[in-house]
Image 1 (cartoon, rainbow, N blue to C red):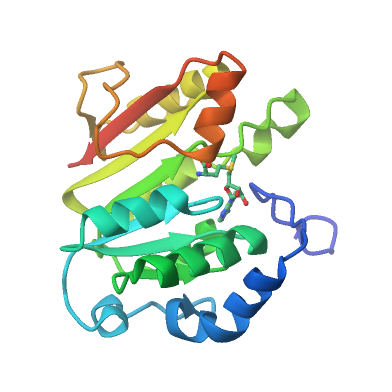
Image 2 (cartoon, rainbow, N blue to C red; image 1 turned 90 degrees about the vertical axis):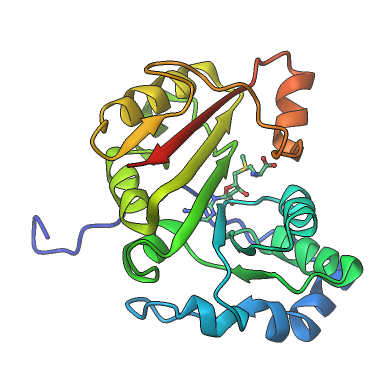
Length: 230
Ligand SMILES: C[S@@+](CC[C@H](N)C(=O)[O-])C[C@H]1O[C@@H](n2cnc3c(N)ncnc32)[C@H](O)[C@@H]1O
């Protein structure tokens, strides 16, 4: 509160409802109860209870249409996968993919990932967090919406177990520089797996994403940043 009115949080997204296809609408009715998670802010998840086992959990923030998340979860059934997205058509798309591929190790949240990290994840609960091609918010007046801030790094450090991984990627060079600055600014929390100040070679474990392909069509070079929690 500054002038008596509650301060409006600056979010990394603008809610655009977008149209659901008929199939995506059906997915919300029939598949969300099985693969979607409803959440009350402030209530930490019991991830082992949710997945029915205590395997390591990987979180992807902002999975878009979820094709790459479905591929990662399918290739790596020994870990549990949690996806957070606010764009409902993307969530509907991924629900259909979960059904089509018969995945049992993937659950979805329709929430602001920053809020979930603040109060939904107990310390050290995650094996890894992936943030692929976050919205670059290229205009200067929108830079404050970029999700990868010092606050996010601190939330990630709280959520990721010692030795766990934070992996991000972008095709927007000025954002890449900002990411590097913010992450290198927390050497007590994260170690750069590529060496101080360096971008990482693209890990084979990261499937191409829709936004990455778009960036490549526009001629943008893609960089990966992979950090290990100390
Ligand atoms: C540029 S898109 C990239 C999507 C996907 N990772 C890809 O590479 O194709 C960024 C996505 O992040 C989502 N997003 C942005 N801020 C978010 C937040 N705070 N919580 C959850 N999702 C968020 C947006 O809705 C959008 O779908």
